[in-house]
Image 1 (cartoon, rainbow, N blue to C red):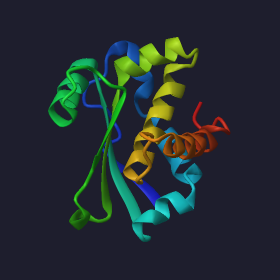
Image 2 (image 1 turned 180 degrees about the horizontal axis):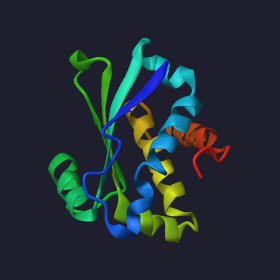
Image 3 (image 1 turned 90 degrees about the vertical axis):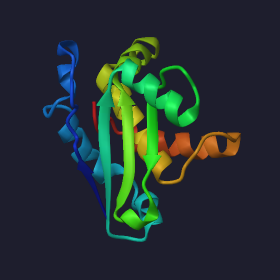
Amino acid sequence: MKLAVINELPVAVHKRERWCEKRFFVPFLKRAEQKIPKHVLNRFGGGTLTLSVVLVDGKVMRRLNKRFRGKDCMTDVLSFEADASQHPYRGEVVVCLSVAARQAREYHRSVQQETALLFVHGVLHLCGYDHIKVSERKKMFALQDAILGERMCY
């Protein structure tokens, strides 16, 4: 099972956020594909799991969150599942860089660490994990911690 990522580079990146270009984000994604457990990816019946990763600013994220979730505020990450007929394309993970930067300061992490966490979190949502119920949250966050636990992307 392989995790392939398309359009991994942001459309527009602020100068202070240049770390998310190829020198950080592409190597991280390559390490991530090796660390996401096969049983997570196997939920899709084999083959290649393909997804889009999009890095956006707060303004774009707020619009997306309002349009698709009815919430007029920024959020850190959104996942959009593709139609089953588009196999192997699984969907899109959208990460908000400005929220990632704010949360990184709040949780005493680097922006790279926070963005990595948000990426993995979004992929887990595409793989069917959720955190609405406490029992689901424990499973999802334990898996998220296990994937990121070896400092694979920092």
